[in-house]
Structures are given as C-alpha cells and as structure tokens.
Amino acid sequence: MKVYNDITEIYGNTPLVRINRIMDGAAATVYAKLEFYNPTSTVKDRLAIAMVDAAEKSGALKPGGTIVEATSGNTGIALAMVGAARGYKTILTMPDSMSKERRTLLKAFGAELVLTPAKDGMRGAVAKSEELGANGAVLVRQFENEAGPEIHRKTTGTEIWRDLDGKVDAVVAGIGTGGTITGVGQYLRQKNPDIKIFAVEPFASPILNGGEPGGHPIQGIGPNFIPKVLDTKIYNEVLDVTADDAVNYARRAASEEGILAGISSGAALWATSEIAKRPEFAGKTIVVIIPSFGERYL
Image (cartoon, rainbow, N blue to C red; front, side):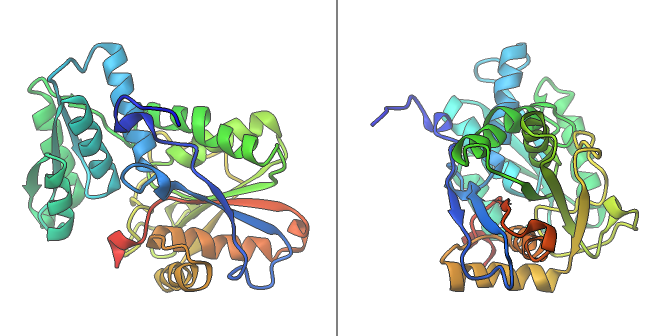
C-alpha cells in the first residue's frame, strides 16, 4: 500500500459504481462517480486542493499564510481541511443563517468563521471576504478560479475515460461553480467529440435555460448567477430539476442502491433517469457525477 505525506495527497481516483434499480425504464447503462470518497466526502476537495496548489505555485500563498473565501458550503469545509493539513490559517465568510452543525464542522478543522447578516445573502459574505483579502490574505475566489476546471481536466475527466476504457457516451453533472462540468466535458470532448454533456440546475432558478434566478433548497447547485469558470458551450442541454424530485432521488439512491448521497446528487440522478430513458441512449453508457455524501444533509 502506498504511503502518503498528508491527507491532501489522497484525493481523486473515486469509484464508478453501476446504478441498478432507480433508472426507471432506462435502456442505458448508468455509472455513478462517487465523489464522496474524497477526504471530506465531497468533490470540492479536488477544487480546494487545486486552488491552494495554484496559490502556492504562484508565490501568493507562503508558509504560514492565510486563505480567505466566501462560502456556505462544501468548498469551505474542503479549504479548512487543506489549510489544517498544510499549516495555513483559513478564514471563511458566510451568512449567519448557516446551520450550527456546519459551523461546528468548519471549526473542527480549525477554520475561523466570520458571519455576515443573513439579509445580505452571499453578496454580503463575498464583500466581507474581499475586505479581508485586501489585508494580505489569499482570496481564492472559487467561482472564477481557473484551477477548478483544470483539476477536473487533469483528474476527474481522465479517471472516467480510463476506468471505462473510453466507452462513455454521456456525462451528467450539476452546476455549482461550473468547474466539474467544464473540466470533465473539455477533457472528454478532446477524446471523443461526440460525447454528450448534460448540465443540471434547479427548476426554481433556471438561469442557464434563460429563466430568472430564484430561491431553492438544493444546496451545491444553482448559485443564481452564471459563474465565470463555466464553459457555457460545453454542454448540450440543461435539465431543470424540482426540489421534490431531487430529494426523492437522493432518498431512493440510499434505500434502493445503498448510496447515501446529497440532494444535489439526487438532482443529477433524476436528470440522468430522464436521459437514460431516451431511445437514442439505448445501449449507451452514461456517467453521473455524485458530488457529496448524504449524511451532511439528513
């Protein structure tokens, strides 16, 4: 067994597991890429490690330095983990509406939390992070950091192609920062231009399909704006998923497949079930990205 220098070396190479029971009426073969096999049980570990690596390489982040980010989700947890492992101070800004459980988890990794008024939403948290970043800290800016798509080109997309021996016809992924679908899509399209890429967003905030932004309970996707790192030309279609369908498919994944995944994973699974029923995907292979473990959302 290989020995690692620290926890940040063991991300990636997550398993592909066949979905057997919840693709109702599907003629396609569906594999789920289980990103909760990363250190903090989320795909965001890839992003956090890549952003810190890039900051170190550029010289912006020096030993004993400080990382700052506005986040109310898994990116913050992943950054706190990387900061702890590499000896950096991590400051995370977020609305004070964030759950006590999430705050406790972040503090367990040694992160410092700076809470902003809930009425100001994430915009208030971002403004505070910019203020803190002006004081010599490194502001990683996940929604515009090109290290995100790059790590998915180098790792996630490569892993999918390798593990399926190139026999993949479509990929389905939710849109948060847009880094996963951009990087995976770009890598796979270089290998096979005919691969179909499907994006998933909340029905209540269908901005990628030209609708208006809105509030929704599907954590991790649908940030209510189009992220700078998202390649909007990489996907063939965007599927809008209701919160009820997302929750239902997350529950079904647990009770029928033994896969405990988050609500955004349920959204991606619902979208995949719709795609897998289409006649043109009969006999084809579809990969769906499962971004996080479900225990965090129970």
